[in-house]
Image (tube, rainbow over all chains, first blue to last red; front, side):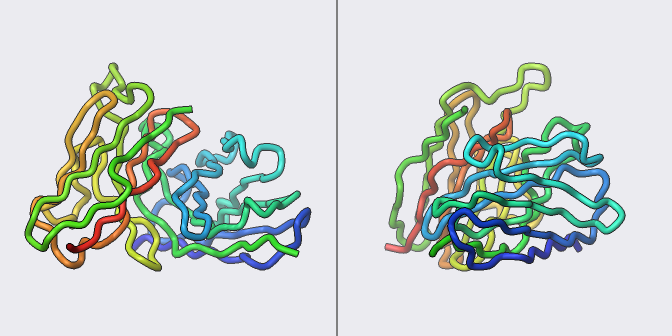
Length: 123
Length: 113
């Protein structure tokens, strides 16, 4: 059974930093692209960032480029999102999401989602 | 960026009746080399993460009831619930995975009339 367990969400002041983590299990971690998708309170879904299986290639939404860094530790089956220069608009539930195989050219298809972790940016 | 636009924003349907949601992309998401539409549908119930329902525009994820169906190609797509059940009350999102940034529609809220 695929499981994705996010952690690290918290209340942080504007301009602050936070690190999210996602512990994955139940699938071949080093085969799949992983993403973060966020959802502001009462709003829709926004893809944030993705990382290839080896970790060598990363992708970002324009809204977070230069402020967020995605990484993965394949020895620990863990995904991370380092967030800095946080703004009120970053307030959201952040979901860790499993994508497709990188070799299959469908890695933006999200077949498993974690329960999410809430990040609140407020003074 | 590819903009995904859903309609309507919300709809109320009687139990057992058909619900239809439209999704339009700002450019074609049909990949000519494999003739596949890079379009997925997700269902999100209150307090839960989204759940993948349909991919490649028309392929149901295993375990998804066959009252859910997807159709369309190019830029115009439809999600149909043939006979609405109480457990189908949710927000439905379409998403293109053709090109980064992967983008979602704004969501359609389905309720019981």
